[in-house]
Length: 161
Image 1 (tube, rainbow, N blue to C red):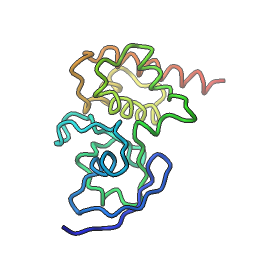
Image 2: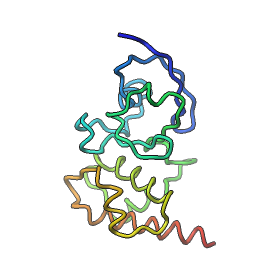
Image 3: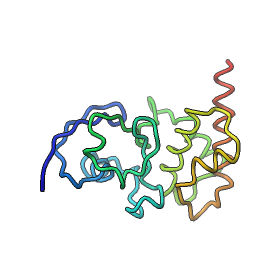
Image 4: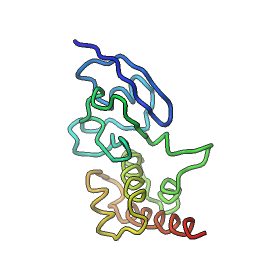
């Protein structure tokens, strides 16, 4: 198997790694960097459990080859916490009871974060579209949509002050 040297910036830290040509970004994140908040679900891009932000955009890390991420910035769920403080989206998920088993939560939170970074006042329809690639078998999505709306409201209030 061909090895290639890549450089990634993950959650603000630089990494230089030797990867095989068929290693996925998910493989590198979980197995090489031990960032297990990114979940391995379907390995086909259908469930969204492995969602990370690649250059600020949500991607299914099981579908991205590690070599495709060479030189790029990746944010995982671990990267949202700053100085021990949860991101507003994470707080909203907790406050609104949008977490049950938690398996889909990292992907949902990161998809929501990407949406709110682009649009601080999303409609319910825009929220649903943003999380459409993330499957949840526990919550029924009502509390998830409410949490994202709540986080958007908090972000708007912060922006005004």
